[in-house]
Every structure is written in C-alpha cells, then in structure tokens.
Length: 146
Image (cartoon, rainbow, N blue to C red; front, side, top):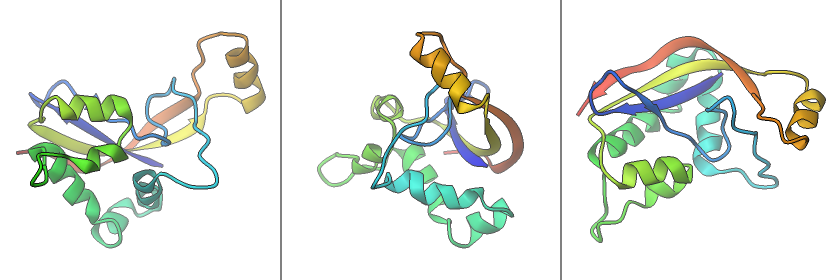
C-alpha cells in the first residue's frame, strides 16, 4: 500500500506528486537506492501498514506538517524551501514554481504488473513498460483547502 499525495489549484484536476523511490506513476521504473534510503520515502512507507488511519494519527502525524508546507510554500528566513529536496525533481519543480490551493492523500495498493523478468525484457528491448498496477484503497487525508 502506498500513500499518494496529490495537489490541485481548483479541487477538480489533481496532480500526483512523485517521491524519488516510491511507486507513483505506474510507468515509472522502480529505483535502486541501496544501501541508503531516501528519508521521506522511508518514513512514508510506514503509513502502508494497516490500519492506515491509525498509523497516520500516531507515528506518521508528520504527514500533516508536510501537507501544510506544500500548501503554504513554507520557506525559511532565506526564502529557501529545503524540504523540496525530499521530493522527486519533477514534483519539486512544480512546487517551487508556485503553491497549490488543495492537497489530499489517497492510499493505493500497488503490485508489479508482470513478473520482473517479463517487464525487464520489454524494458531492455526499448518498449514502453507498465511496471505497476494499482487499485484505490481509501482516502487517507481528504482534500484540504488552504
């Protein structure tokens, strides 16, 4: 199970934010990050344990702080937003260029689309590959307007 953070300016058209090494876009290949883990990716992993709401309310309550930072464009005294370095570059660029009015977090169940040797053969052959399938599980944080 993976929490997916989405942002919007109108509450209708949502853009999913990508993290460096977490499943998100089903066509994005899994990353290799050993021996270290990306900090946000590693922390968000725990929300995947059921019951998701319980994990969010207890150990993973930092997610509310992250959503607040995303919505207000939280910057330090120098006008920098160092927390953007925790995001995938495409998502960091999106948020660097302006703030969004809405944010939400939905839980999805991800599975590999095919056995890895089949996907790998296609990928090495230059084919466009779908790495994951996903199914909506629940709304973890309903749309928030700032």
